[in-house]
Image (cartoon, rainbow, N blue to C red; front, side, top):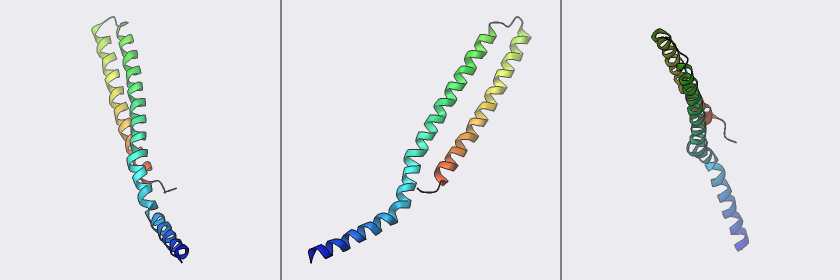
Length: 104
């Protein structure tokens, strides 16, 4: 008799666990996958910006006039603004795809 009641409890547990799968999947995507994706993208972006800064500073040494320096600085700043805009778009896309992906 106890074995029969244990089977019913197991079935109920399976039903509850199956019903909780979407919540668990959303939790995993929101609290694990998304932060990991954002951290990885942010670190890659920071590395890219540091490389660009290093290249810029190396180029500054070869400037022979103030107008050349101003031009170099303007190009560097324009590229930085474009890079930050592209990174914001990339992060938004990562958030969208990570949070809206179909549960596994």
